[in-house]
Structure formats: C-alpha cells, structure tokens
Amino acid sequence: MRKLWVGLVGLVLLSVLPGRLLAEDADAPDLKVRLLLQGQAQFTEDANITKDGWDNEFFLRRARVMLAGKVNKWINFFYETENANFGKNGSFGDFMFTQDAYVEFAMYKELKVAGGMILLPFSHHNRQGAISLAGQDYHNIFSGKFITDKVWRDVGVEARGILFDMLDYRIGVFNGLRADSSKYITADNYSTEYDKDLATEPVARANRNEDDMPRFTGRVAVNFFDVEDAFFYCGTYLGAKKVLSIGGGFDVQPGATFDSKGNAALYKAFTGDVFADYPLDETMGITGQVGFVYFDRGYNQKSEEYFSPKLGTLAKEYQSAFAQDGSTGMGAFGELGFRFEVLKVPLMPIVGGEWYNADVDGNDIMNIRGGVNMFIKGHNANLKLEYANLTSQVQKTVNDAKVWEDQKANQVTLQAQLLF
Image (cartoon, rainbow, N blue to C red; front, side, top):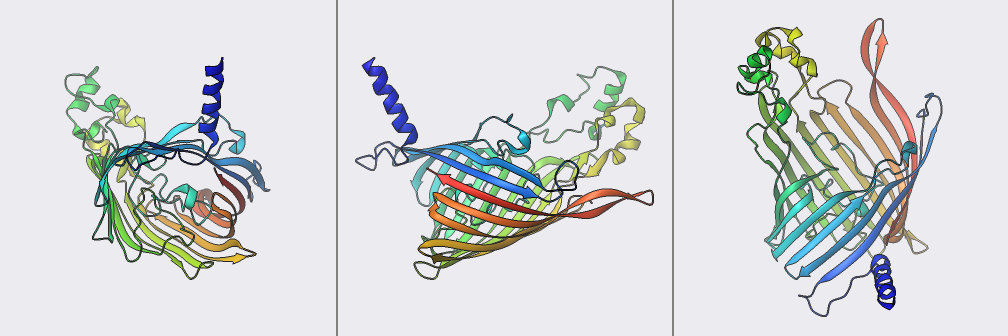
C-alpha cells in the first residue's frame, strides 16, 4: 500500500508541477510537463440559426497537454495533444488527438534533424506556436490551402539550423498527399467492360501521386538582429528578443494535383514574410508582421459521376469532369501591435487582417481585426479582446441567375489563456 501511495503522489506531482525535473549536468535527462487552456467567449452577428441575431458561444479554443524534454544534450523531444473548439456549437464529440510528436537530434546549431509529426516549415506565421501569438489567433488563410495536413502538420523529417549567425533555414521531406488505391484501375483489376475502358484511359483513373512522390516544404530567412533558433517561432517575444526576419518559403509535391484534363500535376505554394519584434525600452516595444501567400491546387474531380457509364466515351467527357480547385489563389495578412505598461501591467493594442483572392468565385476572404491584449504574466496568463469585421461570399439567386455576394458580419471575442 505504501508503494501505491508513493506512486500516486509522484504521478500527481509530475502532472501538475510546471517546472523541469532539473538535471545536475547538461547530459542528464530532462522533462517539462505543461498544460495550455484557451477559453473563449465569442459573439457573432447574424450567426444564430435564424440569421437575424447574435450567436453566443462559450468554448475551449485550445486544450493541450505538452511534454517537452531531452534524453541527453544531443536528443530532445516534444509531444503535444490537442482538443480544439471543445464545446463550440454544443459539440463535445471531438476527442483529444496527437498534434505534435517529434524527436530532434541537435548536433550543432548549424544542423538539427527532427522526425515525426511536425508543424510545416512554410512561413514564419504558420510556424509560430499558438501560445505566443501577438494577436488572438492565427491569420487563417492557410487552412484548406495546403495539399493535405492535420492542423498544418505532416509526418516527415526536417533539417534546420542557423548559418553564419544570421541565416535561418528549415527544410523537410514529408508524406504529403498519398494515392487513393480505390481509384487505381489497371487492365488486370477491372471488373466490368467499363472498367476495362478506364484502364486504357490514363485521365480516367482520377488518381493523384501514383508514383508515391514525397512532399518538400521549407523556409529560409535572414535574421538581422537576434536569431530565432527555437523549434517554434514566437508571435511576440515581449521584449526578450530584438528580431527582424525576412524570409520566403515553399511547399511542393509532384503529381499531387490534377490539371484541367485530369492528368496528375505539380502542387505548389509559395510565401514571403517580414517579421519584426523591436523593444524600445524595458516596458515598450513594437511587434509586427506581414506575409504573402500563393497556392496552386490545380483542379479537382467534380464528383463520382465521373465513373458512371452514363457519361459514355471518357475521351470526350473528361474535360468537363474536372474543375479548378477553390483553394487556388493568392492572399496576404498582417498585424501591428504596440506594447506598453499601465500600472506595471503590459498592454498591447493591435490591429491586423487577412485577405485572400481565390481563382474560383465564392472562396474570397477579407477580414479586418483590432483589439487589445493584457499580458498579466506574459504568455503564461493573459486576456485578449478582439473585434473583427468578417467578409465571406454567399451565393444568391438574382433574376433567375446565381451570383456571389459579399456577406459581412461583426464578431467580438474575449479569450483567456493559462499556460501552466
């Protein structure tokens, strides 16, 4: 019984103590256990079920358990669970899942290699940790644009490092989009005469990445002051660093999209960004960033009717069976905040927004945001109040014709963050 009580007490202490299990030397194992909670109260205009009043939501934007540590001075690791938007719209059905899980071999500052479930090294903003954002949340013009991802993550291997005390590179090889075996039809596995015709028409297989090609994602940046050598970037360092970073990124995978004729084509995305976090003195500082993105998702198969014999001869019909992907397009985002203290409590008024111009009607985005943050205890405890004017597109019928119109909505969100 004594051993059981000792074990239970040890487990409780391990779960709740935020500090490290301190090692006596740099080569000894080390572990940190942390909990992140972000609760939100959100009020959105004309978002109730009848579309004529304010929708009121209380939910957990993020609930995470994080394990970070090292095996020795050369090998470190990070594991994180996530339960996003828990309770939103009255839904509690989404269970906690593994979001980040990697082991990193840190041989030198110039070369560190990590393997596992990794936040894609595409841009400064999407590589920022949610804990340290300057604004209330991400400028979400990445979601739905990557060829595939799990909350902007993918499984693979990444090399990163700091060269010449200023050049930050992060380049990885990832799974990306995998071929769908259910749509792979050859002359040896057809079941009907129609399928036999499919086997002779490469455009009819409607399959991407048949050659099992990997995905390549990376970013290179120049740091003009302090370097950003941590695995995750910060949205604001709250005066701990002086940073000016200018960088560009790419995300490509051969054969991961379709062209207009249904042949496998190259998926590609590019970004450029500038990030600045400049302390003016011990109590004041400026934080800002701007980024530009371009995504080419090619074309998508419209529906499974493409495989229906009703279409007749495939060679005559394939062109109408593929439509340009609604995620293809270009956009930009930015934010600017000014940090100062009132009664020794850091405050940061901040403005920002995001814009995306999709090649396909109905997928444009234009949001303007403004708010104020109160960093009660830095990133460990803070409050963020934000007002947003959100513009999306909805389809309406005007004079028997379907047209896309902008739909605007006001939204107010209060977020409380606790990192323990």
